[in-house]
Image (cartoon, rainbow, N blue to C red; front, side):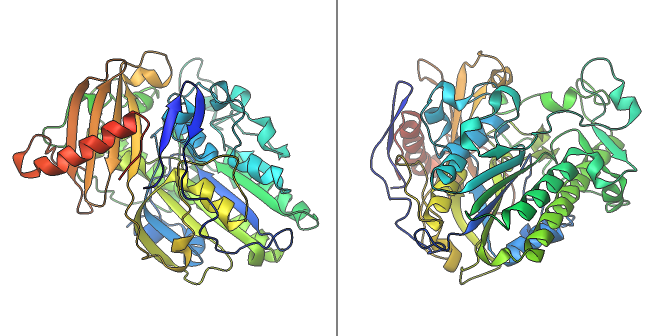
Length: 486
């Protein structure tokens, strides 16, 4: 059993689970020789990376991290939109535990005494610094108690071109390519902040936890021209365009996020040229972020800090680029919930290997706590992944859970009527949609994912897989009620 948790009002009542430090990899040793940590969060990044086998991506810096670490090929976020996903990972608890399933709720409104991941490091004598987007955004979503120091979240000035800056209301263009240097856009500034911090940290007496939150490839797809040029002439192929057969309408949305941009139609399909432009823009942004990370890694090596620094890279949720009749995130489908996770530690015995176990973003908190020999304030929802750093093929038979509310507007307004819960096993994804309040099942989905394709056919109700569905439905119903069990 991964863990068993019970929700009681707005307080977290957690029953016993495996201790976060039970599988100790030994990166630190008491108060001496404690490793530094660089935590990299990338907004809207699906596994469009060279180290994940993507056919288009040019990501040498991230690939270099992967060569020195472990690639988790089947890691899943707990809700495919920024605030719930980040709140879940950074607290070590699931969305129904944090009470955060929308973009506007701060996790401390529901659980004021919770200790976040960076706060744990701060409480244990680390100097904890952030730049860019770590929690959902700046403003009211800041969590000052988590940090010793915070640089800007860079929430404004997505654009630099005059035609986009002068738009009076609403979103401007969905893409932008400026003939400018990297620092003209926020992620270049974020990388500079991180480099400057490392130059100070090398002389610090205490170890550091550096959190870097890159803002791209989130829409609008804005990046310097040279990154767009990397993909000039590429003919991007959109596969699996159709909705899965027999899938219910509740599983979808009207591309609401994308359709808000001035160059996107309010309904109907995209023109082929616009589709290609969006794909090119997405990949340009990924390569732009990769180059910024490269600057940070170069400085880390120059300062001779690499040998005592853990590096972890994580995408907050996945993304659709036209597959399954969807753009952006905000569903319970595989492409929106599957996220890149790479962990590199100086002392791991096996490097550059892929771990195919089903893991979750809530596993990150106990993993870093275990690697740095820290005890957590309370029992967390996830398990440490330390065991895979030396043996990526080690036995592991756990599942991954995610969820999403409907209607779509519930991510910004208190109008949720239905919550969809989904469980991912090595072969299956089962999703049940429950009416909030009564618990009545509104719709059912069951997909065979024993291949590299996303969901193709909804098999729910098929007699040939009846026993499988019954088992997974029982697991989902328990999860919905706050009980996790295999």
